Image (cartoon, rainbow, N blue to C red; front, side, top):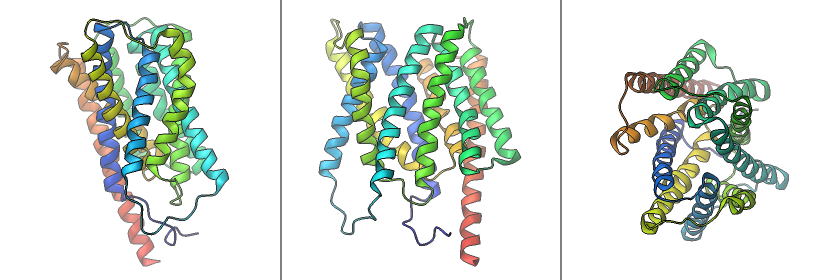
Length: 320
């Protein structure tokens, strides 16, 4: 059945832009978190909890201020809406918790490269099995180039100790991220992915509830003599790489192919590497530069292929 009679989602070009902004913004969260960890005793699970709570508060305000639409969209079936809300919220909680546990178990470098490296593979396989999406030879090469760039970027700067249990946790984290991406894309294929802002609000609410017990055990309140700086960084993390970035991510991921989404999101470690050099005083190594260029090339290639594919589909629908 054609999609032409269904409500139209965002244009592909705008969706790609949203995803790129989200990926870059997510990378800034790591730099902010690094500073918080340096100047206070706040742990990663507590930081993630406050990230969800702050993002939830900001998005609830945005929902309250958003003007009502003159014509309401088609009502989403209750079962479908429940699946979208619970699936996204649980996936977000699982993804964040397993990732932080992996970092604690096997270190930041290995935990990050396994999580972000396994994500595109799991998403590509899942999209092929559940939605029949084909990447094509160019897509396969782009994903391979992105993974190679990520490996060079994360592992090229130093030695990393690999612990099997931490690797398992990182793969589980990647599975949670893949599930969110696939669910968002599957529900958005016929224009029924739901309102992105409402989805994000519910996801953060479920995430905050899920993270609360672990964050409480770790310690919810920071102890520091620079409390103003810590609060300011927490507000930034809640506003930009959380409320803004996740709303843009869910809007874009409902339109763009799942495998393309997964590779564009690899811009997160690129922006994190740039900030580490420019703001945190880390050295710009040859591996950092090479990995960044590989990732940017892969993202550009997939974005161009996605735009060409969308244009071709529009032409085919116009001729049908």
